[in-house]
Every structure is written in structure tokens, then in C-alpha cells.
Length: 337
Image (tube, rainbow, N blue to C red; front, side):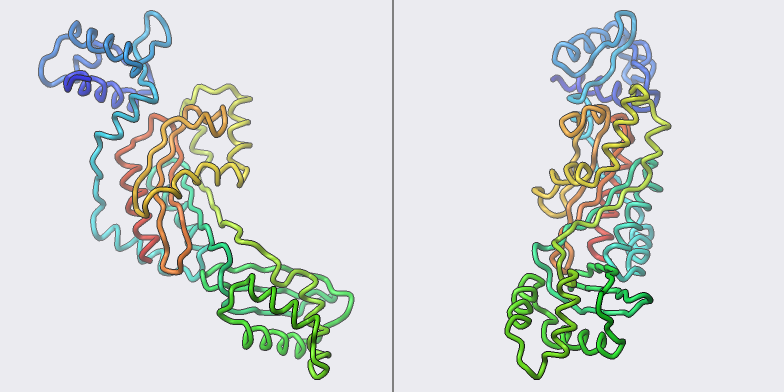
């Protein structure tokens, strides 16, 4: 592509982002600063169409940039920096939250506010995180709230019903026994050692371990490395013309409701270096209804070793400069909060 054709192409992309309508050569001629004629621009557009950068929906209509055109445009952008005061404010906001779950939720909400698109944040825990502590709380009707906190700041809780009552004092003793003996161990190793101890319990611990066996059987430590995912702002996709039928829009929202599908979207960023922005234009391979969407994301490694992905999902004709800047800076704030 010649430098001039590249300039014409990027002018077309910006015009299409602004209006959402096919772009005519006359409109680009009016935007052009070097006095290039409409005829010269038509020739450039014909070349670009032949090379796969532009399509023409109707014979008499203007041209529409393809996925290939958007990729070329994105590559030409430089990162717009947020003011240092705004970056510090983001970091302070996230620092107010004690858990990864709370930070994930707040991050997705802030991305939505900053970009008017769909903000997505996800934390992917280590394969077997280390145990920080266990809390056990007696509830009514023979139920117990079991809370497990791991050192990567994940908090899991579960309410179980027991056939045999456990007193508050017994719950405290069980909690202390687990925390004293297993804090700092990986969950996998705690399960393995606890299963062995329960099987070969010494007579002096029978009463305590018998009660512990009840909770263990109810899945006290039975959880895997479940990713924490939060998405905000899906309704923003209603206000842009994605050229989808009502049925296709329903399919799109059903797909976005599936945690597995959202994780598929984010998986592609995990292979990138931490802090490296990735842009994916057109997502039809994930789901046919996502062909007119783009995803911008950045992977970060947290101090506790957990991986996280900060991303924005929006229409292909989104404001890439603004969104890339938001994702980059929010990702940095999340990593350093």
C-alpha cells in the first residue's frame, strides 16, 4: 500500500467510525487537507477495494472498511496517555478494595464508564493457590457457612446442611486446627494431607476429627481454580447498529451470558507478554453473532502470581484510540493497586 492510499484508508475508517454509514469519495475529498480531488480518491478507493481493505454494500453506495482496514488503522495509532492525576485516581479507587473479586467488579464498571462499551475483567488463579485461612460460622437449622480464603486473595464460601450438629466451640476448634496446621500449604496438598490424617486419626483427636470429617465430606476444600469474571455494559451494544437481526442480537446476548464463552474471548490475551495491548477485529470465529465486534485487552500479572485480563468489547467501529488508552491505563492501575 502506498503512503497516500494508507492515508485515504485511515480517513475512510475514521469517517465510518463517526457515522456508521458507507463512505463516499466526495466525503473524503472534503476531509482531505492536501486538496486531493474526488477522482484521485476514487482511484485510491478502487485500489483499496481490490486489495481487500474496502467493501461496497450496494452498487451506488460508498465503501465500508473491512476487518483488514481496521487492523491497519489500529496499527497506526499511538497510545493516548491519561493525565497522571487520573491514573493515580484509578489506582487509589482499586486500592480501596480488599479482594480480587471486588477489584474485578469495579474495574469492569470503570471500563464501561470510560469507553461506553462492554467492560470485562477477569482473574485467573494459580492452578493450586495457597491457603490463607478458613472461617466456619454456625447458622440456623443445622447449617454451617464455610469460608476459604487463599493467598491470591480469592474468597470462596459455601453453606452446607449437616445431619449431625456441630457447636460453635467445635467450629472454632476445627477452624483453629486447620489454620494452625495448613496455612501456607497449597489447597491440593492440604486436601491430600487432610484426607490421610482423617483416615488415620489418632485416638486423642477422634472427637474433633470426626466433626471435621463431616465438613470435609461436604466439600470444605473441594474447589478448583475457578476464574473470577465480571462483565459490565452489555446493554451498550443495543445503541449501536451491528446490522444484526433481532434473533442474531438475542444469540449475541445469550453468548455473552456464558462465562465459558467470555473466557474464550479472553484466552487469546494470556499468551501475550504482561502489559502488552492486543486488538482483535471481528470475532466471528468465537460466535457468528460477534462478527461486527472488536476486543481490546491487556494481560497483567499480579504480585500474588495470579493472572488477570482487562478488556473492552465493542462495535468494530469503536473509538480505538480512546479504548486502547483506557484499557492500557486501567490494566496498569489494576496491576499496581
